Image 1: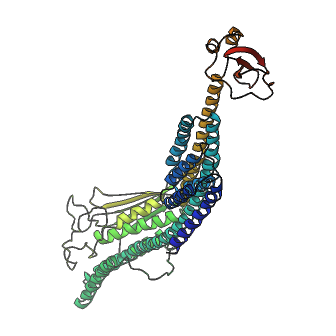
Image 2: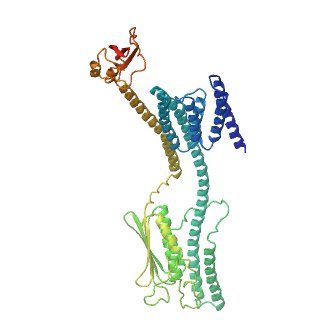
Image 3: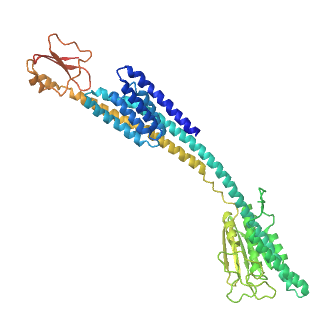
Length: 531
C-alpha cells in the first residue's frame, strides 16, 4: 500500500510539473481550449507511463508535432524529455522504442511535405528527436541496466547464502553417511570375528552343553547385532557434534594379526611402502572387507593377503578358499557384492537357519559397493571374482600418492559473470542501436541535403546557352527544378529596375559562387556569376 501511494504521488507531481509549460505558453497565441486538451493528454500520458511507457511517449510526440513540425515546442519539450527518460527506464524491450524513433522521421518528412515546409524544418525535427527524446531514453536505459546489475548482485548474494546453508547441511548428512559406512565396516568386521569364535566354541566337544548353548546364543546375538546395525546405520549422532574423521591407526599387519587371533587361517605378504593417508585408509578397508567376507561366507577356509608395490602404485589381494559344504563347481557366497544372490546356509550343526551366511551373520549387500566408491575416491580401482577352486578373490590397485583434487566449479562466479554479460549486452543494445539509428538518420540528412543542392544546381553548359532577352519560358528549358531561397550572403544586391532575380548554385558542395538571373517584364534582363 505504501509503495502504491508513493507511485500515485509521484505521478501527480509529474503531471503538475509537465502542465506548467503548457499553461505558461498559453499567452503566445494559444487558446484555453488547446491548454485544456494538452493538460488532459498529459494526464493520459502519465497514466499510461506505468504500464505502457512507449505509447505514452508516442502520444507526447504526436501532440508536440501538432504544434510544430520541428517537434521542439516550448509547451511540450519538458514532456518529451520526461517521457523519453521514463520509456528507457521502465520498458524492458528496446524494439518498440526503436520502431518509434524510426517512425517519427518518416512521419515528420510526410508532414513537412504536406505543409509545404523546407528541408530545414525536417532537419530541426531530427535534431529535436535526438536531443529531447533519444538522449533521455539512453540515460533511462543506462539507469535501468545499472539497477538491474545491482539487483542481480544482491539476489546472487542472497542465493549464495541459502546455497551455503544447504551445502553445509548436505555436508553434514554426507559426513554422517561416511561415518555410518566406516562404523558398519569396522563393527561388521569385529562382529564377524566374534561370531567366528563363538561358532568354534559352540562346536568344541571339550565344553559342556551349557557352555555350547551359551556360545550359540553369543553367535546369534552377534548376528542380531549386525542386523540391527544395518537398520539403524543412518542414526549415529545428534546436533552439531564434531564428526570423528581421522582414520584408525591400525595397520594391515595388526588387522591380520587380530583376525588370526580370532581363529582365521590368514597369511600376510607385505612388501609395500606406506602409501598416502587416503590410500592407506582404502588399503585397510580392502583387507578388512576381504577378511570379513571370508569370516562370513567361508569360515575355516585359508585366507591369503598379499600387499606389493608396483611403479607408483600399491597392489593388494585377499584370496580365500571355498567355504565348508561347497561342492564341486559351487563357489562361495559373498552377499556383500553387487547384485549377489541371497546367502546360502550350510549343513553344519548349530548354525543359524536359512537366510544367514555360514557364520550366522546377515549380509547387507552393500559392502563391495561402498568399498568400490572408497577405492575410486582414492584414485584406484577394485576387482572381485570367484576363483577356479571355488573361493573368492578381492583385489585393488591404489596410487602411492593421492590424486590432485579437481577444483570445484565456481558456480556463483559463473552466474555473476552471466549477469554482467547480460547487462552489458542490454546496455550495448540500448546505446549502439540508437547511435546506429542516428548515424543512419545523419546519412539520410546528408543525402537529402545533396539532393536539395542538386535540385538548385545549374550546369555551366546550360548557363552558357542562356541569352539575355529570352523569355522566361525559353530560359526555363535550361534551368533546374528549383532555385535558392533568397540571396545568399556575401553576394551583391540586385541591380535596380529588376522585377525579380533568381539564384542558382554554380557548384554542388559550395554555397558560392552562384548564378543570378534577373527578369523584367517576363524577359531575361541580366545574368551574372557571383561569388
